[in-house]
Length: 117
Image 1 (tube, rainbow, N blue to C red):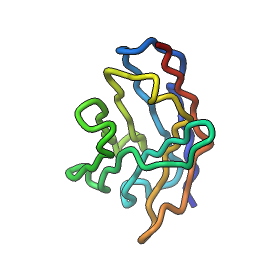
Image 2: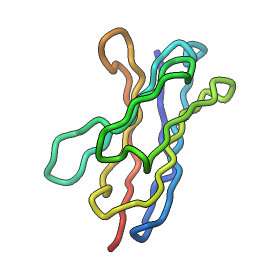
Image 3: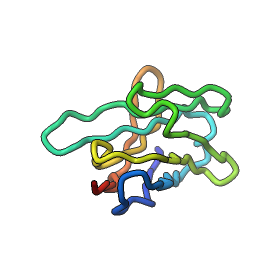
């Protein structure tokens, strides 16, 4: 069982930056690949970024590539999402998730990110 708690969301102006954190409970955090997803009002949840269990492999949605960076600290059971050059279209609730086998089996409650123009 893994419990995930996101933090770091807030209100920022376009062009600004935020860093999201996702703290995980459980001793097996380092064995999971982790992902960040987001859901904007009226839209479906979408993939944002993924990082392998070791941190040596990452993947990003085209819409955030070059602006967002996912990282993890297994000693702290935490995964991060550094978001730079934020745009109003990045406004959404951001969720972290732990990948169990082929699917993301554990999800956090989400943190709101609002980017004003």
